Length: 506
Image (cartoon, rainbow, N blue to C red; front, side, top):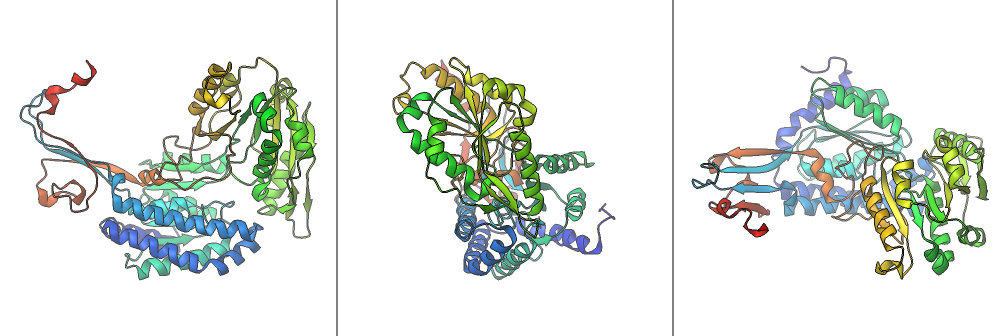
């Protein structure tokens, strides 16, 4: 049964995606990879026109947007390489074994297949890298799932222009009709998410909207997976020795990270824990790092940021180190300069509810910790989940042999339990598009803490495992055949090996 509440336009989109699913899932990996490369090439060819639209709609700089187009194309090409290599299929073959220790074992073979049509809700702050052809979209198409993108209202013209590039490129690459669609409107996105022909969803945005969509996906008669990247404050811990060693370098990197793209990044360092009496505040005050005024993405975001900034500045015990501000123009757009404030750990605890939540914009809080503070205990005290956690340590501390080595190891362990990426002596803004990347974390950083939205592991969100038992070779997926025509990695369990299980641990 389909959802009769869909408008004729949405019904046509969902029906086309559902109809395309079998053919798209059956495309050869090399053909699908070629299509991703064709899309990447077309995107870069259209860069001048697309960036011009994006600058007007988002207020982001030309340099930032040019780099983002390149990153988006690189993601597409990375997934092309991934699906040709085939490791994401996790092909496993257990040959029949009449001498299996638990009784005769049948021939069992396991691989992964595409889920089916997926809806992706675009982000506002990355109009290329997390929008129409961004990381989620690339992973969905690479997995062999028809894609329906819900355009973000902050850049509708850019979404249409990017979708036109994608549609033409996919058609020219010979992909089935119906594998890509763009829709507009929050209600339209919700209606499509509820349709039983949609098999998964993805989202990048606020905790509130992400929770709403996650609950809709979970409350369907047949619940579906939903992968949301939501809120993160990305705590940073800086040791006294690191500040003594390179205070000016740390201060400059910190201000650059907070101010980049007007602080509208999910990986912005929102909180920095520093030892009380350390010289970082003075280094920030004397820093010559440029802090130019930058337009926020849209008037709604600007107004929310201004209100959040006022609440933080008004909290008891908070003092401004870098005053910053927000200026509104005639169109209602907000133009922000960075704000950095400081607060003692006691005052931070006392004003917890006013301070601890994300400020989406160029604002960060220094929290001064007294000597003897158990830093590892601060993570569960203040935070649930985050995308990142960062440590700045000295060269001597990096050896792991200083007096505070045990304390630092405990902090790393605490961070690894509550974030998806632990950084040393760097800044969390800037997410490398690499196979090993992890861009996720426990709630509320994401709605599914075992997944990532960046890196080659992102494709696994849109696949599901299937095992075939005693299947004739003619009916096996190519990844599971003995002749392995795709040349993918196969984990093989030969007959007889169960007799020696456990021997290596004796």
